[in-house]
Length: 167
Image 1 (cartoon, rainbow, N blue to C red):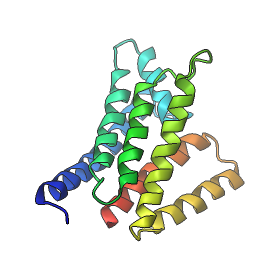
Image 2: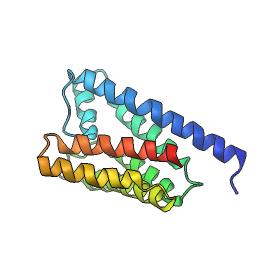
Image 3: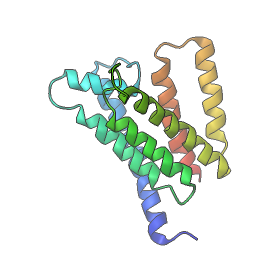
């Protein structure tokens, strides 16, 4: 049985994700002169290049989304682990570094976040986001969409957030 506090925190987390995601996405597009990036994670390097110490915004963005996802733990433990994966993405920002393990941790965190969140939704009876994600990613690969990773991440964020609202 869920307590009132769990439900309230989960609802607040969903509202937070729903607000944070479009604001950050629009901000990084604006900072990159409205050009789509290779991936959302590349925004760290775009913001760092502007030399205003804005790269911290990427870490804050991933933490805010991670907290919002973790607050859905009472639906499934997979949301908790998926949120932790998003924390890994935010803490291992210098993923292009070939010498260290940061890149591997970054990518594993991203995959954990997306897959476990979609599976968590599926186990709770919300299968539409997984179906949309499979068809969308397959279609993008088939059509050879440029900046594939960016669009796959956008689709993942949108389907997961909408899926959480469907719970």
